[in-house]
Image 1 (spheres, rainbow, N blue to C red):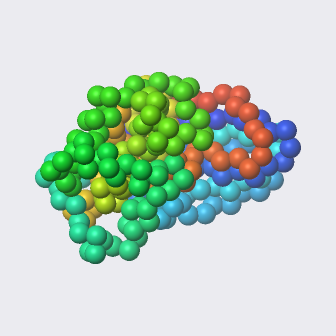
Image 2: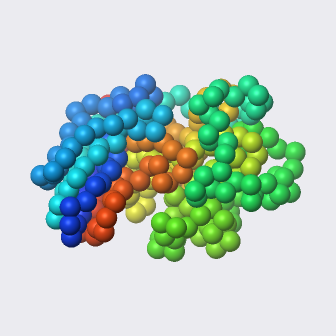
Length: 260
């Protein structure tokens, strides 16, 4: 799957502010990024640092008054996807060390609170079959509604309200997976069928010795996502993190399929 990606951001700042920017498709084996280009308005400081687990890059900035970002790239997604239903969970004592943090609770994913629910709602299921059942449960029982969640909304809040956006769906699935002792993390991605067009957040689970993307909203599949970065939850993958007051002037994201 080849994707043409174009992102434009325009933010205002009342005073000089430190910013973390993460909008570029990651250069990793599962996707080939060609003709990447990013243009920024003048900034006081610019530095690149590795993203979480060295997947993608973050750009550290110090900006004043205004930040505009113009990014475009072509991404050929070469990810091998598998039917999750047949994939087993790995025994905890055999998990690779780097997966362990994704078993633990995080800021937006208090997984211990979901243990009784998962055990009672999905008896007899394990591994990929359990992940698919959880994802189906979210699509059947939750509503995709913009504007009902905030930067403080946790998986518990979303589970109670039964509505939210992609990051909220991802947080609930991550928390449920961890409650079932399956390592799970968030992935920020570009995908062509996200409506309305935006940065997209999905879940990634560790099964049968590999990470696998799962979109509980049903808007994207592993074969048509361009990965930007990964993390414990949304705090690790925000496309723009500001350490001071900021306001949004405009934002445009375009992701289209191309013929290779």
